[in-house]
Length: 259
Image 1 (cartoon, helix red, strand yellow):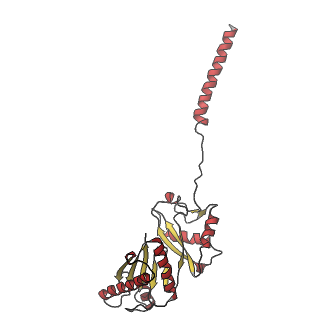
Image 2 (tube, helix red, strand yellow):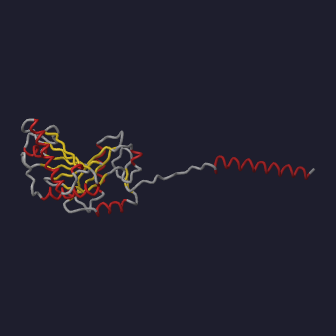
Image 3 (cartoon, rainbow, N blue to C red):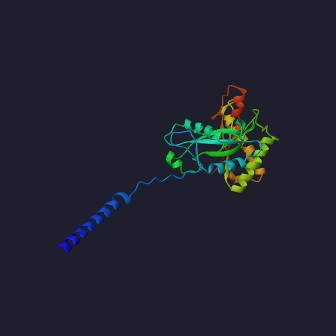
């Protein structure tokens, strides 16, 4: 009798142990709370925030960007705005990121730009730089380079090019020609004018200016079929036509490399 009772007690203990192990596996061991830390690149932003967040990889990326500095160029920092965000965040982000380069760069060595990103904030974090763009650009009275296009201004209103022998423009076209030949990409040259004169005359004048710049590239070995010319005449001013300086800003050829 005692042996039977002892056996039943042992069996009950084993059953209790088995149920206890099943409960532990289901409620504790099976699915513990885990925290997976997201791995982002050197730079990103939280949603609706202009504060740049950097990782340990930022120091190397910053050094890489600074190493590409060339004489006479500025670092353009293009801040992104994401889908659903206030577009003003883009400029705020660019200015905050620029502070990460000061020192060694000064205010005069930095330019700003903005660009709406083609994605939302969470997906933008997967980009190594949070969709921020860095580019060393030329900025002088003749050549104003942006991250996706370049403007070359005309000093005087004329049917003839007045920029012959201008070292700023010559140097730019030398670099542009080499880039086009090495990549095989096409380029679009669009002529613009101020509002002086008739609209039809200005449309023709804009085209002549674009054709003159096409000749520059052909002379440097760029194939003719890689160059597209167009004119907008006086229809797309970027400054007032009420002042001499504003008119000078509007007399321009816009250069865009096509991807």
